[in-house]
Amino acid sequence: MPIQVPEVAVDEVPVEPTGGQVLLDVREDDEWRAGHAPNAVHIPMGELMARLGELPEDADVFVVCRTGGRSARVTAYLNENGWDAVNVAGGMKAWAATGRPVVGDLADTEPHIL
Image 1 (cartoon, rainbow, N blue to C red):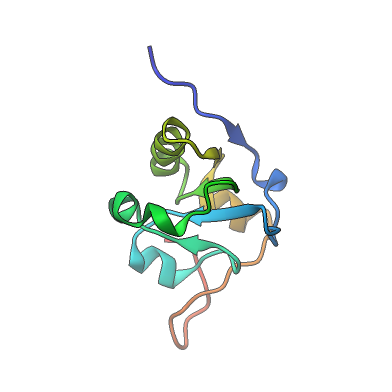
Image 2: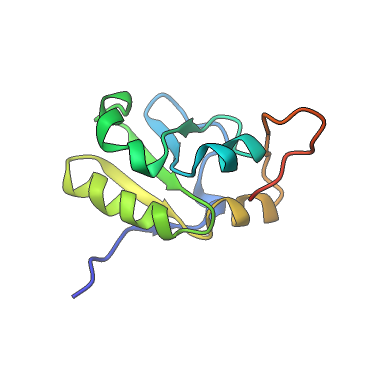
């Protein structure tokens, strides 16, 4: 039986997380550089286990990737290990499509979602 992963619509995710909230982007470095939410924390999925100490254990964690697949797996893992995490439905594609802010780290290139 598949694990049910808690999920929220992108419009339920705070654009500016408070001290008790974290927007965790688990996409790869090239995806992050092309475009990401301005206040997100970037830990690629493949580095998560080694970098768990960077996530506050008492925070509400909103997990995002490109469309929701990787972030669903990370959400399940975090919840199994003591965090309160939810998957962001539709990922960064939905974030950008709803007009939420996106910033990038590439010179002379408009921020975009890979």
